[in-house]
Image (tube, rainbow, N blue to C red; front, side, top):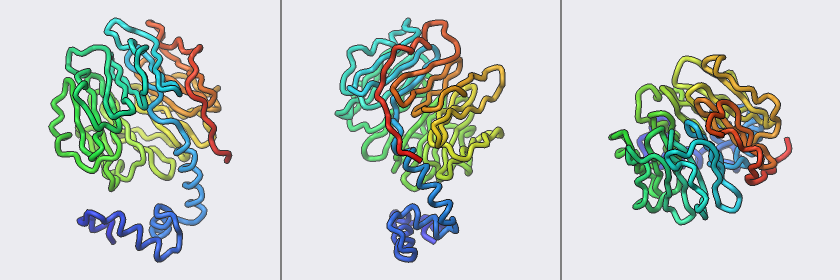
Length: 319
């Protein structure tokens, strides 16, 4: 009832308290699902996906047009590929907790809530020096977006993005190509562009965007797009939207792929221990559990020369 009415600021919490009281289930998410008719078997399946999803490293791998960036366990950053605009000049960065890339720029979130950026700044996408209280970052091709601790959003770059000024209660942000996206505390999906909006995206756990579309990872493990093409995935635990397709990870740590055109397809079927993915346009990258990074696709500037990289190793719970 509270979900349907939606007019109360504490509607989500009220619904969870009622569901816990009726079902006796201590987990609020499970209690609500049970009240909505989800079977106990399906709840157990969703719990497994949630456990794996929670254990995956976040914001540690990113790709631009022609460069690849990785975040090490010690808070330093490594990059490979085109550096004409200085987008790979990250050697001096320390205390980094998250990274992302635009077309020709690289951004890092520091542990003190400030942000650093290098690379092309023709559109002011690197003007982040004054940002404070930031808890998450995201990039479009020529913009940088930051999520403040109060749930509001700040941005700099090519686009005006007037919609972002009205976004509140935001808990996560994403972006790609020219679209900025966000999820609110109530599960509402927000987008700066109409092509990345769809009712089907509501309730997403993860929201990402690229050229003309947004991709949502749902609690069930399904992935939904705002466009017409839909990947037939049932147990995804991570996604990354690119301009030529989507990469994902399933519950068995295999790489999922959904290409819009087969001529752009890259083969990652040999990887069975993936923990993070980064989908790009001409190249994409996968982080393995042992910390190795496998990048494939165009290597014109050495953007796929990541064989010597060692990011943090990741141990996932057994099935």
